Length: 215
Ligand SMILES: C[S@@+](CC[C@H](N)C(=O)[O-])C[C@H]1O[C@@H](n2cnc3c(N)ncnc32)[C@H](O)[C@@H]1O
Image 1 (tube, rainbow, N blue to C red):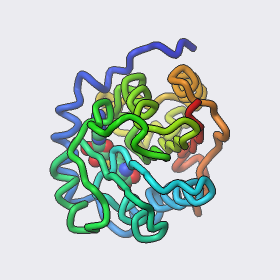
Image 2: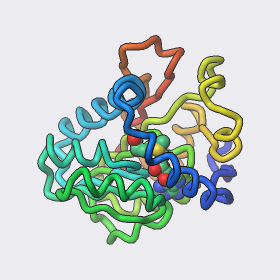
Image 3: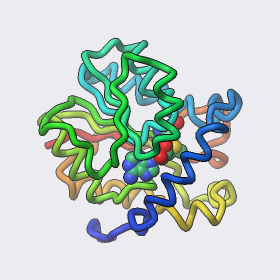
């Protein structure tokens, strides 16, 4: 698999962002959060704790649950919550004033070179222009900095059923092997890649955690 393909997500990103502006109202349902979103957030927080990261960026932070948890549970020097959707960020801003919320695209974060020690992203990478976003993550990370990404592995039957055709048209879910290729091509070394642990069979919500270090 070539690492240089260009995912179709970017061309439709304005539409994606508009969709998330609308979805922001529904996003925080407790059952959805507990089963789908909290387990990957727990994994990311464990990785950040292990790495001892003190300057952190959460990309595609949505309504800000993970970034706010990072701010409150890890008490880092700084945590940026970055998202392209003003609607999602409006919700996020009510959650924590310890997070620096930024209405930015993953591909153009507007942070200085080497600004952070860790870049994390949950359930958003499939919307990004993968190569451009990874180049931007590499730029804002210090050498040796941590990258931790969780997205849905699209290859299972259940996963296909869980992703409505509308989403499939607007995003591209790279397989774990494709993620490896993309991340390595962007100048990172993969340290871990495995399913996210959760209280449901992995075939139902087959999230994959990829952890890497910037060269
Ligand atoms: C499924 S939500 C995930 C939110 C959050 N990370 C979580 O796990 O709860 C996907 C988010 O990605 C954002 N997004 C999509 N394309 C983006 C881009 N190119 N740059 C930044 N954010 C983007 C959307 O606005 C949306 O808030």
